[in-house]
Image (tube, rainbow, N blue to C red; front, side):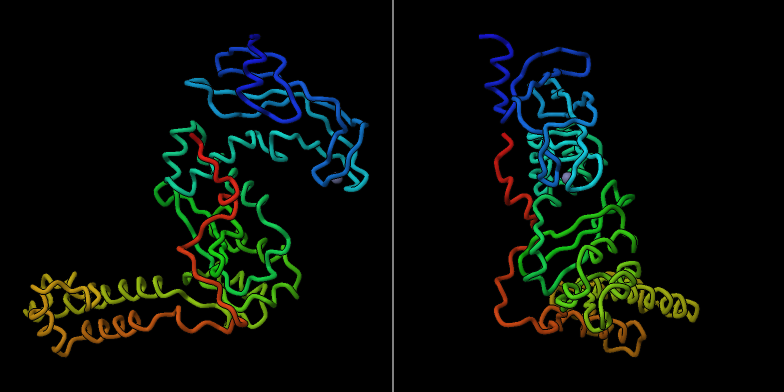
Length: 343
Ligand SMILES: [Zn+2]
């Protein structure tokens, strides 16, 4: 069997065949030859005419210990539908990507299951590449009818690189699907999400659940009518902020008491931070005495407790009829699609 035939069988790419195989210091480079067909614009328009052409390389899934690249000629065409020169679409890669579709699908599949550091090490790609791939794959999976049933959305930030970099995520709460991902956590990260909809479409959004993060609040206010009524700060974050506020009150009161020679609050830090129902039995009597004292800390604690018992999740701004079952947290629609195992 010829080596090119072997690679053709192994890769199983559609519409192309492997014409050359080169073993280079960077890895195995497979030169692709495409079957004769019209050049296709990403918008769907097709033509035989070429504006210009060049050779491009795409990172593909590793072959054993070697990196693998696909190399092919790619044309730019003057698309009459788009009214401008665009790079043609190829079957093995998404438009604009320097990674093959198979490679991207594996990254997106892994991104659902392991942390990004693991992906960068396993697949030998950069952080930036992983972030871009997830964005590309999700963008492809999102269809234009996505707002038809979108009443409640959640906005959240995810940190990576030990909290030095962020992504902004918008998800559909009822469907449990990620609808949008962007770099960073600025107002400019969220704005394009709302701007991809018409004002009428935006009016169908009834609630936006989020952390108390000013850039997100500003973005919602800039794009939704009656934004104040639609923003819901989620319970998890409120309780977290309350916990921090409580600790600040305790520290300051402790300092004050110590100055008067009273050490009632010494060693009590963690007792106040427990939710009352989770307080270990051995601390219960000590804590009962503490909270009965006339302390600012005890009043701050009572406020925190009253918040954590009444969930923000119970009283949504009205969603018409059927509340489709809450799924077990956000999943990307993209990864439901590419549920093929990478093994
Ligand atoms: Zn076009």
